Image (cartoon, rainbow, N blue to C red):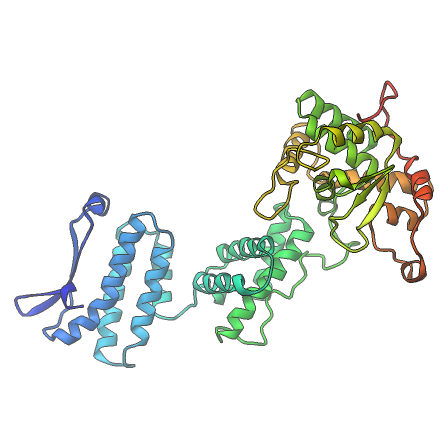
Length: 425
């Protein structure tokens, strides 16, 4: 620390040279500030938080985010290490006030400069450092990377809302949920965000930064409470009209996106999920059936009869594949999903067509479900086609499942209103 202080006349000063490339941005060649003491050891102690702060300011000028927040934490640690009520603590707190004013003079908004001082003095606990520790610990949690990334994204959103732990309360979280709902965040997304934030709060309680009895994120995700009957219509995915499915397929063809048109066709006559279709291999085409292996649940692993309207399409895709997948040429994202890129193309096309946010690719699955219901297909048969868990205890425990012939007869009732009577091929 001695090389960061220099003696002028009878007093010691803290000094730090600024890298040449940042001097113009910071308006000086070096930082310097009187420590108001002639005692060298005392000067070294007083200089530590100043030097840490100046280094943080240099990092921030160099483009490193959160440097001011990190500086406040270093001041906090330095003040904690000093004896309570001593002259050094009083001196450091005086330097802190000067530093906060300096940050404000350098362009930091007044409220942020005040928050800097409050964090440094230990009056409030910033959320960001806790988030960083919690986020790092997720790597060893055994969760999948996609789950980890989503939780980090959710909690980062919360940290932006609540800069300090003290701001987080059941009422504040309820108000936040209401803001998210008014902003269009779906009910399922709000539930997921609350779940992620509860994991973050466990870290807060573990570090004894808040009462273990506090449960600020155990609130309803909706201002109306839980339950589908209370959910807003905008929170629910809606099925496409059969004519809209035809329009989507035709638009994909018009756009020259034959791969997307083929995906829509497969979805329209199977009711399968987008990733189920995108991960389907040519070896999963078995005679007159499609074997779905890559499913979300055990019930999702199933055989789906090939509808007459897509028989030629399936045969074409099987023969034309050069990578072993029925929908050839799709790429995996970092989570191992093949549907990510083509799903985004579908979303952009659907939006450009003026279709609402409540209708997504999964809505085609709802269209098939609706057609099966309106055609009088028994719930158990529809569940076996769509890969849903059966709700009836007897069927769930004792039934061996619907036969392929019965499923084929049910799927034959799915149709779409083409003007020329054609099919999605």
